[in-house]
Amino acid sequence: MEMAVSAALVMVIAVIILLLLGAPIGVAIGASSTMAILMILPFKSAATIGAQKIFTGLNSFPLLAIPFFVLAGNIMNNGGIAIRMINFAEALCGKMPGSLAQSNIVANMFFGAISGSGNAAAAAMGGTLGPVEKERGYDVQYSAAVNIASAPTGMLIPPSNALIVFTTVATSVSVAAIFMAGYIPGILWGISVMIVAGVSAKRRGYINNTKIPLLTTLKYFLEAIPSLLLVIIIIGGILSGIFTATEASGVAVAYSLILSFIYKSIKVKDIPEIVFESAKTTAIIVLLVGVSSIMSWVMAFTNIPGIVANAMLSITDNSIITLLIINIVLLFVGTFMDPTPAILIFTPIFMPICTGFGMTPIHFGIMICFNLCIGAITPPVGTILFTGCKIANTTIEGVIKSLLPYFAAIIIVLLLVTYIPAISETLPRMFGYL
Image (cartoon, rainbow, N blue to C red; front, side, top):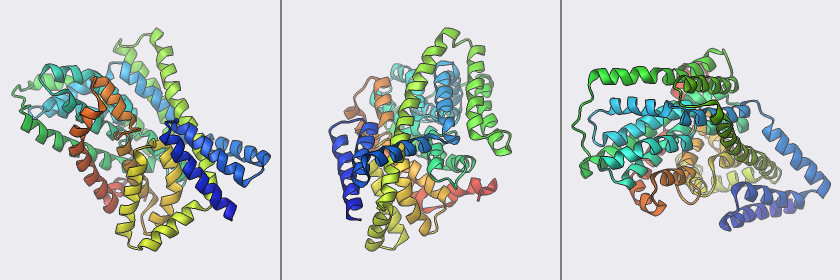
């Protein structure tokens, strides 16, 4: 037992040191888990169990949806779909304060709903709208902050890779159920960003006095219908049982590719590069899932979840305070760990505590994913933050100050999601998943 506790401590200390030294997250998790497992078992047994855990962690049919959704997102990013989303979003936002920034937020929500990727949304919308906003006098850091703050809505509004990863750990939760649960929290995230962006735009004088004609709005809507139809096909197909979430990801690839060929924005010669970029992104996710599976086994063997649960419950048995502590821990974790490994590692630790207080696994899944999505826009590991700054050609230091009000608004929504179960559970209950 003492050896198990020592191995757990070595693993935790090693992963922290490696991350502080700048090691990639996959290397840090893999190396620290290997050190721990070698302390517990002989080399031959450790190698066998390590290989088995990597295999079983990746041997998941729902997980197969991720590479296809990544590929679909990259096709949409290059296939003329993004600009149609932006035009329709701009028509919807009309004369709102900071209408271009507001259209960025709405477009990120639309694009996320058909691509499942926050990074893809930040790149597509920032790259297209950024120059236009600059031309109309918008401050670059304001525009970048709006784009970065709203891009993670695509990680909550289905289809969502983060939610799929959660179901591989919480096997009692179906992909369809967690997808339904993500809609309202994702939309609330977007609305909170719109409120802050509108207040800031009014203060800066970003007022749009140009009215978009009704016929133009109708034209943009008709052009966006084929893209928006993908949402109905994917979610409708899953809910009706026509196909699984994994099969839906294949449908998304085929549909987006056909649409891009119709729009003549992708040529056959472009496909290898798009597939290659998607493969690189998928390889990172697969590596993180594999090495996180070893770490999860080590934590289970050393009873880290039980130790953490007992420690937290010894501080307080008040569910409100306990959930607040869990949120603070996850917010801290999200600043230096990507959502994928964090979900895989911390779900087994915190879910038993939360379900012990009566929280459903679906509610917990949305809470942890929402929380860790905030980490995607915070330094030092915020991938969406880096993408948004790079696309806007500005510095992280300059954008962070502009992001602070958005962080405050998003955290308020996080607290609502945490303490009001209906936000996550209403839609799954309506469709019979609860």
